[in-house]
Length: 393
Image 1: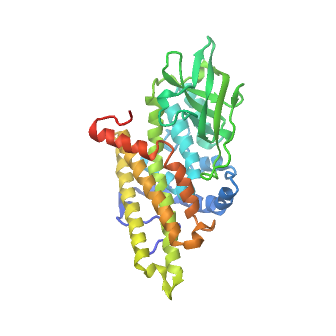
Image 2: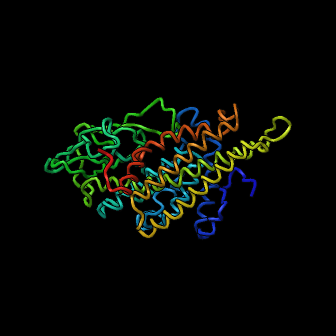
Image 3: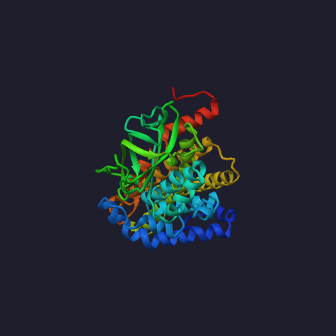
């Protein structure tokens, strides 16, 4: 077990024995797609700040959009471990690819399935599953990130429609979305979800430029200026922050798996390079400091894998708590960004070149460690769960 090909996933504790044959088949099919579709294009896309062409339909073709949504609504009806493995393989390619699938699945399809009417489910979910519709999720605002309860976006009841006003910021897929699940306060100050559709008058999606991170992904704003939302576009089955926070829990779960893929890509690259690169007459893999780094990388990846497998089991049994998901998101993202940075050093000057993935993964993970709850916010969630004392105020 001393060598890992670049397209493999290390399995130091034989955790594959905990997977079904279906899990392994799903993982391999997504891995093959990443190798064929993402890897040849991703450096150019990131360098030139453009998304991969036809990405959402490609993700739909391989069943990566809403894979746990029931088949009745266009999903594959897979379990939560399958979803995690898909996210892992996508992020081994790039965080932007995983983000696109994660937003579509956990932040758009999930709330429509959980909180929508039957008519909404049948109207939107099948087309979201194929990538024929692209969705966005509107929660974060220019003045309200970690405190979504203070959101200013609001809607009023105008008899035959709702009138929506406000703005959302840092929204993945915003510039290209066809629909957006938007969280806003009603006239009583209660938070509810609405589905806004591109083409509605007063709805615009300006793009966010000059990003150093997630450069192969479109990011933007959702701006609502007296947008008329049909009453049938209100999500009927949730009121309050529980709705959007449950979406974030699903997304955070996917992230906790996804970043393992980024870490593995860095680890396998560093291992191969260290065996081939010679200094002082021998491979740098023979030096103690390099072996220390590789051993620590593999240890942390293995811990993250086991954390996710048990969390996936709990998710399948509907027993996973938000605090458990927060712990996995925080731990695994920190693990991945540390490996990306340290493995970059192992490659020396070559580590900054586009031919190698370290700098791209490290830059992407700077966003991942911030979105869907910052590193520090997840720390406080765990602290609250431990002590029963709210450290947010």
